[in-house]
Image 1 (cartoon, rainbow, N blue to C red):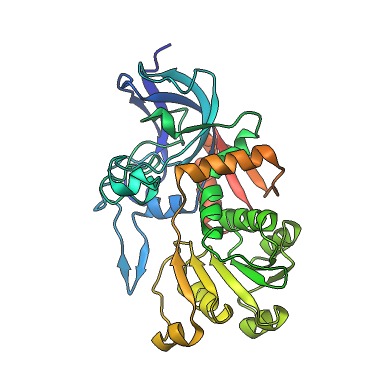
Image 2 (cartoon, rainbow, N blue to C red):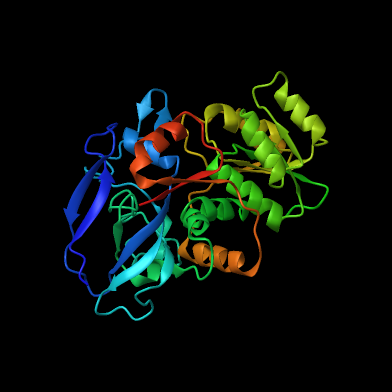
Length: 356
């Protein structure tokens, strides 16, 4: 069967709602693969994409349009589906395979891509759900078979979240130094990615975890998924309260929010010689007195999604052991606009997964 058309939900104006459309598909290139989408996770970065840019602080907004993303945009980068068509040169994946799709595509040729970090390519980023049509559709065209990771018997809805939330969390955790059972790691922001990070951290690190989120429901969920304590960052004297509760021994902080207030909390919470990993893209400016870098000897690291090998490793890990499972909110793809609004308003606990 030749797939000549894709039914998609896309926006045609920055800030606009998503609407249904049918787009023709070009004939398959030799290494291309057509995937029938069965599940697609919804990410907070989709909200930034729909809005047209990130808040860079000081009243400045980045521009996805200037970055080369062209309208209309079909979002969705956490994709699992069934291989339904393969190009003439495809040999490593067969029709009928259920796989999660790695969406962070680079040029494939530069030194960064060659070392396995296509998500950090500075020459020719062409990510699915951004530059190329993504998974808010019935089918997606994947440029090369290497970007497919078979999931075997894993729950496809949960495996879909591995493509962004999973590898983003895993990559951030790996940037922290090893911690002991006496040390604390703070997770700021318990949304979809933060909750995934908390769950993975509890499965892979002996450190005690403190969760920080203003939403009582998310704090309660965090306690059920590995956190030893949970706090509201907006409470009076929150910094002093958290530090005292952790015996002033927070060796690492992962900021899954990435706002001015969350980053300020992170650098003030971490102990001397500790590490702060900033993951979130909420926006604003980072401000800290310069002497603090030396006086506290802290490390501040940025972390952006993860590599293809990390996706393979995460799938293998999930196949080998039962990982803590964050809540999934499964919805029909036709409810995508309502789901995006719920995400915007902070009404989602865990991760929304859409099903065409």
